Image (tube, rainbow, N blue to C red; front, side, top):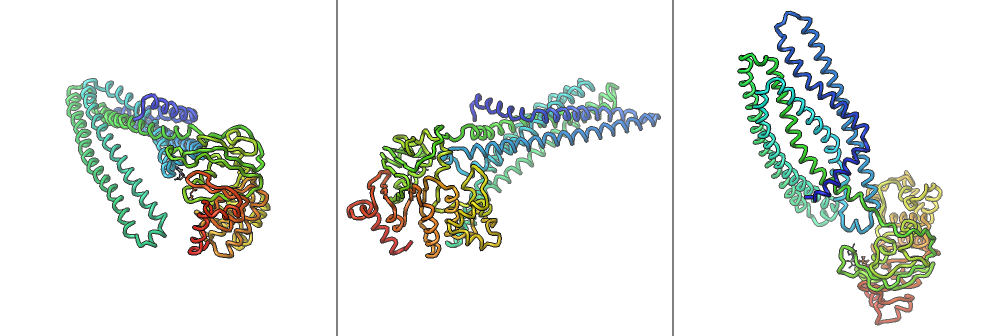
Length: 586
Ligand SMILES: Nc1ncnc2c1ncn2[C@@H]1O[C@H](COP(=O)(O)OP(=O)(O)OP(=O)(O)O)[C@@H](O)[C@H]1O
């Protein structure tokens, strides 16, 4: 349950959203008032018609029929207009919120993504935003219409027969209570069903996205069983829901037709005593139907509205704070980097020190290899360098500027990262290389030049569609070496002052290896390069090596110098690496 003040804040924001579309909504409301007036007029017309069925004045009946037909046509037209205006406003609202929400998510700090699962964010963008459409526009429209109809039908019923109306009004609380109770039951079960369906989807996604592993271990039947189990839960809830609905239907039938019978019985007495006509009784029954339908819409709405407030509060929370963009200095960096007495713990694991009192400096143009066992803190150094996290202690200096004073976006423009497993997006090879430059349009010639320097132009041209070849999800059509060269072309196009290279651990064939190395050699020229290095050959070619162990810098120096210190961490690490390479050459 949300606290009341947060509830009202969310509702204020929901009304602010509605306010953006006020003219469309006002137009929809005007059409709605028209449809309600027509709807209320029809039973009255019908009553008049029935009471004059025996009249010898056929012309009067004809005029009456034409008038009612006219009202019907007008009502149908106004109804179509009302439906279109509200429904389309709902879609425009969803489009608006989804656009803003996605943009806010993109601008969140990296720490945010440590806490939130991509699947969860997807469901905020999907079903939670969709709830706004259903409740905020269509739901609200139905609520307003039901309110107008309820009041109108009640007035008409009271005007036809006070006594008959009083009896039926006493039955309203019973039907409202029943609808409320059943609505609550459905809500609880539909939430359980949603959870069961989400669990089903998660199981399917997990096994299907790792299908090769499943097949490699012959685990199809295990994967199938997991899915069947998850599916069974959702079936069980659906069956329970269906049984409840069946009972509800019979109860509601009894109540509806019981009240109808009561009305007819009491009405027949009133007709025989001459208080009302047959037409009056017919219209009374029709108004009573409108009253009960609108009452159940009204009782459903509140639960629906509060559920949407719940879902929407998560959306508004996500839309609130954006990434801390660091300082305001938009300085060109010269490539020198210093870590000064830096300590850092991830916000999600504050008790664990990922980096401890780390100090080192890198000169402009220097090639520095960052080495250390798994979990030593190599990737953390890079994450801090990119400004993804703020250290709790110490500082990072670019040139003479503290990282906290620099505009993070401007700083990142001057850094390029080549990942260990390059990420390619669905789209063409051209788009994937041009992805390097967000600030301006990139020409064909620039992309081709970058690809040529990355030794990628030749293989790209061999594809029938060349640079327009679609790489498919996760770049499935490209080999490991080809993906790496595209990632290198991307970095060349960015022309960064500082290059961060997370060296691939997986082996390439000798020909690919040579091409990738050639591309990297070009890329590293005259740039400060920090390499998370795994290969012996890379490490020995670096100007300097930083050896990390459990977040601490344990050794630093030229590789030749460090390899001579047989008791040092570097020597141990390299001996292990060489033994491993002898077994699994990379
Ligand atoms: N997002 C995170 N949240 C919490 N702890 C993290 C996070 N990322 C890394 N860590 C922890 O921080 C420490 C350093 O991790 P880091 O990824 O920097 O090591 P690494 O040297 O790059 O390892 P590897 O060579 O295996 O990639 C590890 O103990 C790791 O468990």
